Length: 335
Image 1 (spheres, rainbow, N blue to C red):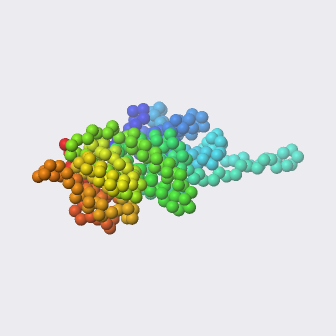
Image 2 (image 1 turned 90 degrees about the vertical axis):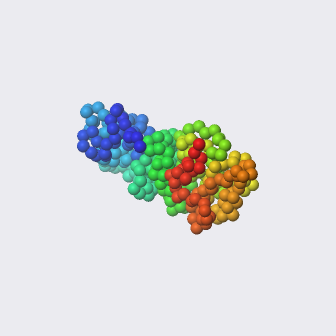
Image 3 (image 1 turned 45 degrees about the vertical axis):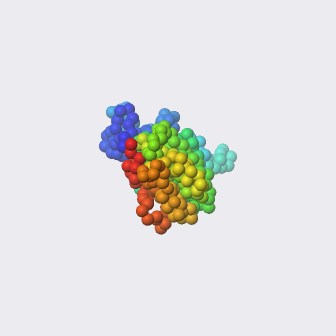
């Protein structure tokens, strides 16, 4: 896992000794804004770090980041940036003034409400990147969201980024949707779309098929949740494994035809719901054979997803996560 650096400095702990703290890039990911935004707030409004390392390198401590978090919350309410910056630095709103005729002047603006863009997601003890990605998704900020997702994949690797950053954030947004009367459906769709795009952009070009080495990935009929399979496809492609991805709700006849045409070393079937997981289908695909008589082959079949819980098919593997699925699929398709 690579360390984020800026001006040649390595990563250090937030609020640590001289030379410690976060880089501007790390702070931007935590807040869910672009690094240029952080630098602009520093240059225009004096919201930079209290101290520089060696008088030059920017390192943000806990109080520095707290000011920027308040700036994010204030601007998200519609407050002008200059006014938000003044309040973030600890300023107070002026009291009503009295005119020469004794009349009260304009009342102060209402106290800003807490921003929904950076609150309400129970992210728990997960990577700080989750918080920034969630904020960007809640703001429907496409450019920043793409940058944060691709940076997380580049920094941590595709499998770790999916498991420790993307999935917790998707789950947090899903919980927000479920507990708010479906007010955040657009956020979930928006985040899922950009995750799908990031997975495709981060993966290398598709690997050419090799006889007996291809892996077929498909959702069972009636199942449209494709993101986990997209993550698996990207992770396998990254490792040089030929993949044929058929996406959501592949009809039974089409699945059988795809298996017969590709002669895969492995087939992975995803089911999100127990209502879509089908034991007879899994058993049928696992029993398919092809090749010359006396040297017929069958695919290794994996049942993936929570839909298979309690519907385990004897003799078939059911990996519990992306890393386990990758590990199970690499040996069968090794050249």
